[in-house]
Length: 365
Image 1 (cartoon, rainbow, N blue to C red):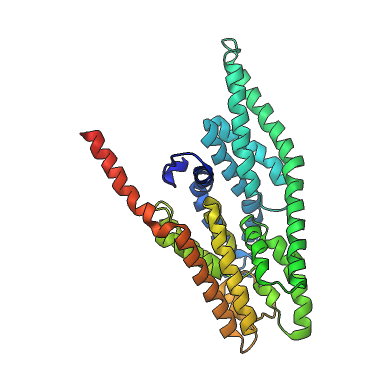
Image 2 (image 1 turned 60 degrees about the vertical axis):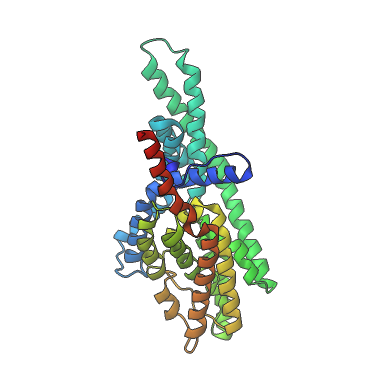
């Protein structure tokens, strides 16, 4: 399944291992990108600050991102490892992770889904030769139930507390960088935290309270701009549109609209998770944007919610639109340039169809 979204990886070594990991991540994330887009549309439209606020329909937002999407990811990851049985136990196991923390557990789902399926695969090998005729269904059902339930407990007590600890540590580190006047370096922590879906914890738990205090004194604060800048996500998605895997390109225009105009940054996180090296591009873009905000003296009067270009400009103080817009453009440009280099300007994608045709020709001859 991973091969659908990334070229086959050959060879050994660290580089090949990282490429295989990226391929497996792609195999778990990309088949479910339609669900991410659906959630993005619902969120952009119906949350209180959305285009068509609707309190009843907005109730779908949290369950989708906190339950449905992690379950889909774990289900897909389990299926890659051990077919339908792996998919089922992966979906069961991830519920322990989902219930064990308030944060969206996409990373936990990508770990526990395939891991649970892998355990069941070896359990099945053990029981296959030891099960008497007529008891196969009974043994299969109970073994899947026991493995899935046990791993759900492991997820609840193991992964949940780890995520909470990571969130707290990231928040403390970001706060220290802000107090030490090292704002551009804060992107080294903020951007990876965002991709792991800790963006709300960082923004509302650390940056917003500090920004409110600063804005009360000076009338504006740059702290509102550190996490909410839509530039890095736009640059990344644009790079994927032009140079990314061909199977992913059709989904990027919709993701760009949801991200940049709808303000739903989570829509681009799976693209980074698919190719982890691209975290360098959003870090570079985020840091460049923050530096631009500092040089131009930009700041916002409140947190832009959601983080769309419209909300950004709406909370920009009079006379500050040039600095805000320039920071967004610089962040998008730097992210795009770095991501394009990391994607090899699509050279691998251009060579792939030719290689496929050559293989078909050889088979026919």
